[in-house]
Length: 194
Image (tube, rainbow, N blue to C red):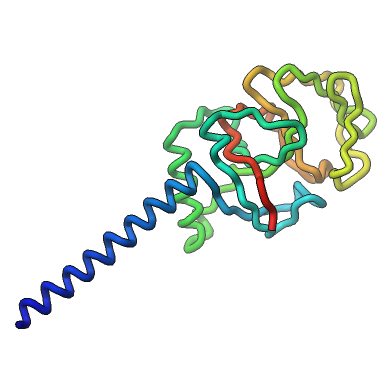
């Protein structure tokens, strides 16, 4: 009788382990391929997005290597000088989960920014504004009316890249400093902010 009870307990434990493992695998597949919740860290997107605000990011566009539209808010891998692989797509969600328990697992390589330039666009930064293909952009979403940044030579966005900037132009690390972002470094499109 005692042996039968022991077998029942072992079976119950194995059933629980199987259910938990299956749930984690399903969650990872959803996280990698469909949607990902994340939080804004920092002030580079003020006044549009705020520090600590929750975002829902659609990942399907990353899998399909879709080109975002002008003004779209995207999540990027800021390490633009290194190639991305499928290992990165698996590792980053795992590190997200680990950072819940251990803050040192959190990475600072993933940024939220707005698409300003697409392939072939010529961007200029003068008089405190961004000019695209000779026209001054109307950007009501920026925090400051003028940015404290100028550049003497224009930037041409290469094929397969986008140029991204934070809405808080005077307090943002973005393509002005890291360069254009390869499309495969766009990890997802922000679809909802809470």
